[in-house]
Amino acid sequence: MFTGEDLILACSAIGAGLAVIAGIGPGIGQGIAAGYAASAVGRNPGAKGDITSTMLLGQAVAETTGLYGLVVAILLLFVKPLI
Amino acid sequence: MNYLMTAANDIDIMIKGLFSYKLFGQEFWITTTHVSIFIVMATIIIIAIIAKRSMSKATEVPGTIQNIVELVVEKLDGVVNGSMGKNADKFRNYIGCIFIFILLSNISGIFGLRAPTADYGVTLMLGVISFVMIQYNGIKAQKGSYFTGLFKPLAILFPVNVISEFATPISLSLRLFGNIMSGTVIMALWYAMVPIFFKLGVPAALHVYFDLFSGAIQTYVFCMLTMTYIQDKMDV
Image (cartoon, rainbow over all chains, first blue to last red; front, side, top):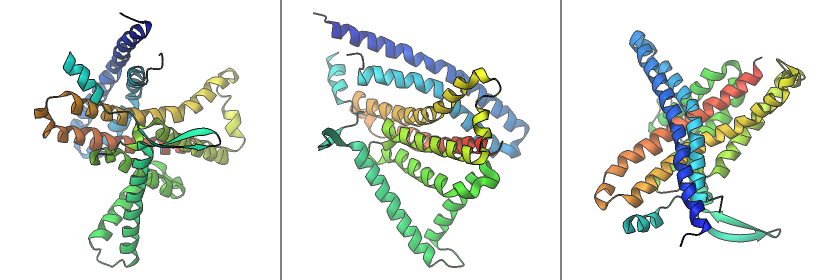
C-alpha cells in the first residue's frame, strides 16, 4: 500500500526533475557567450588568451543559476528534507 | 526494475561518518571530508618542504624542481597582478594559498578521495573567509564612506544593498560546491549504474573532464571573483 512517505518521495522526485529545468537558461547563455568569443577570436586571433579567460569567467558566473537548480534537486533526492 | 533498485543502493555520493566523539554534550563526527582534507594538507606540506629544500640551494641555472616552483609562483603572481594591479602585493600570498588548496582539493577526486570541496561545510567557510576579507578591506580603504555607500543611489535601497553584500559568499560557495558535487554525483552514478563493460576506460575521460577541467576552471573562477570583489571595494 502507498503511504504518505511514498507520496512525498514521488513528489520529491518530480520536483527534482522540475528543478533541473533551470539548466536551460545557463545553457543558452553559455552558448551565446561562446559564440561571441568565437567570432571575437576570428576577428582578432592575437587576443585569444584574454578572450578565452574572460569567456570562461563569464560562463562560470552565468552557470550559477543552473547550479542553484542542481543543488535543490540534489537536496530533494538525497537529503530528503521533507520526510 | 530490480536491477535499478539494487544499483541505487550502490550509489556512493554522501559524506560518511567514520568516528564520533562527544564534546560539551554535543555529538561530533570525523567524516570522510576531514580525512580527505588532511590528506590534501599533508600533500601540500610535503610539496612545500620539497620546494623550500630546492629553493634554499637555488642555482643560477635552475634544476627541475626549482624550475617547476618558479613557474608555479610566476603564474600565480601573474594572475594576481593581472586583476589587482597596485594592490597585488598584499594579496599574493592569500590568493596563491587558496588557489593551491582548492585546486588540489578538486583534483583529489581522481585519486579516489571524496573531494573536500564537495562538502558544503568546506566551501561555505572558504566563502566566509572571502566575505570577511572583502568587507575588512572595504572598510579599511573607504573608511566612513563605506557605510554611506550602502545608502546609494537611494536611501530606500539600503536593505537591497545589504542583502547583495551577504549574497556574495553564498553564491561564491554554492558555485564551487555545485560544480564539484555534480561531478561527484555523475561519477558515482556512472560507477553504480552502467554495465561492467563501460567501467573500463570510459571513466578516465569523465574524470579528466569533471575533476581536472571543471576543477581547474572553478578554482580559477573562485580566486578571480574573490580578487574582483576585493578590488571593487578598494578602488572607488
